[in-house]
Length: 383
Image (cartoon, rainbow, N blue to C red; front, side):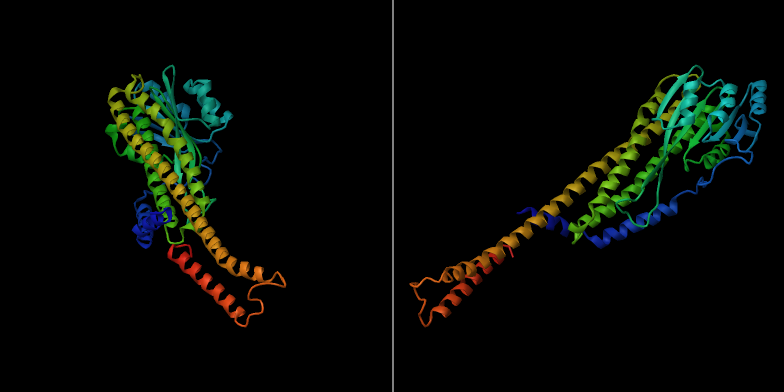
């Protein structure tokens, strides 16, 4: 069986219309179950121009005070006097000047402060004295009506978390990764929030990894659509640029997901003063979800490679078929060309040159030979 027959057989096993309907239903279902998120397309700044989005005090898992412009110094002093609870300070893309006072108030390490301000960091977990500094890559699926060779599929941002005995500071970079719904969910569960800043760190990591899984499911719909188009009847004309674009976007997602494995293992296994052993069990669950996302992305990468190779094989087979057709027609045309060229040499002494039935015989011979060649090529699949 030839390569072309194999590809035709694979194409025949796929019901293109059914796959397209399944892909569309999957996209609708994904949009329907997607939880509402806070729109961060606008600058998340306070009216005073501060980078502080939220400053809230928690005691025994209960919210005590806070607001978009809550007094950070007053909240910290209140917690230190009570020696109970913690302050959750949320920032959005702070400048060095805006972060300088906060870094001094909480005694943050200069290297961690530099990473939090300038961003563009790999996912990691570092300890600076009594403070834990974690970096997460946030991802968001960019909805598009139709996938093209220039479509943006995955948008990434960054989320830094400082965790101490009496505070947790979250610093966001990018237009997504909102912590508003997360804060509301934690406040609805005082028992979990009572476990301190480490509980907030776990909730942040859990939301980031859940977003990885959600984006991976969305990317799968795009891959299914590309696969359907490649194996369609006219799949040879499919744009390979869309496959390369998906691979590039998948690489961006991979850079966000894969490096987080080691930091989560550290949080789940290594003893830390700011992370209680009971919280480490939760980090092990998040690590399991991350492994699932990592395996899914690796499978997508292999699948895209296979789709690309199949498309290239289809193009090669189509080109070979075209070349066979050209060669077959050239062989058919060669017969009259050869005979007419032979009798067009104008020699004085040529057999049947002045014979009464010579013309008819030559024409009949040409037609018979061309018909035999054409029939033979058709029988062998060349025409």
